[in-house]
Length: 273
Image (tube, rainbow, N blue to C red; front, side, top):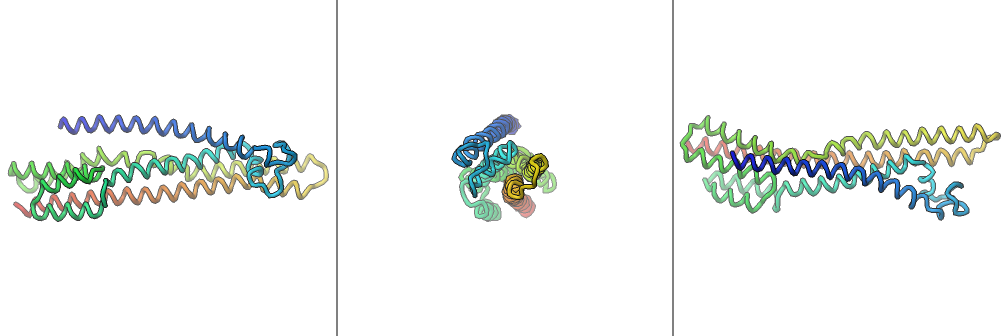
């Protein structure tokens, strides 16, 4: 129980650090987006007569994006955020899988359990490391304890299953941490892009209405600049949803592996009685 409490304190500490990282990352990404918008997209060389207040150089996409307004800065920040949290989740989930092939690890643990080599299976968990190995190790230690105590099959299997659930509660939540950020970016990216497009269209038609004679070239330029927001927003949402689905699938696989080994351990105990 003391080890469980110590692990719980450590997980809470890690969770707190993760929250701090997420907050700082969000702020820095937004700041980065505005820096890119102002100094890269707004570079004078992208515009006629080196004047950002004038039209972009013909065919210059960077200048056209700059003309999309502050919303482009936000969108670049959101895109950067998607990349940053994607990398962060990839690292965390990879560490949870352990140092070796997770599928081979699970298969080997199952083989050792079938022949009653519990200690060897525990040593294999120490070698593998990661969240899955930690849960399996906790279950194996409990398996060894109840086996030595000579508990009935039903009580022992319930105790092993409870140990697996408690260990999973400690280990698995960190895998889903910040996934909500990616899920949110899926919607926010598109909506922010549409907001930029709508405001850009309003500006384009407003300028057209006050310029006297209709200028099809100016209208086309204004619409192109507005649609840059839509393109950037859709790109951000697409990347976010792809990453979210990839990581969700990986987490589901890790959970499946834990369930698979847990079932093998309880069945092994049942067969040994």
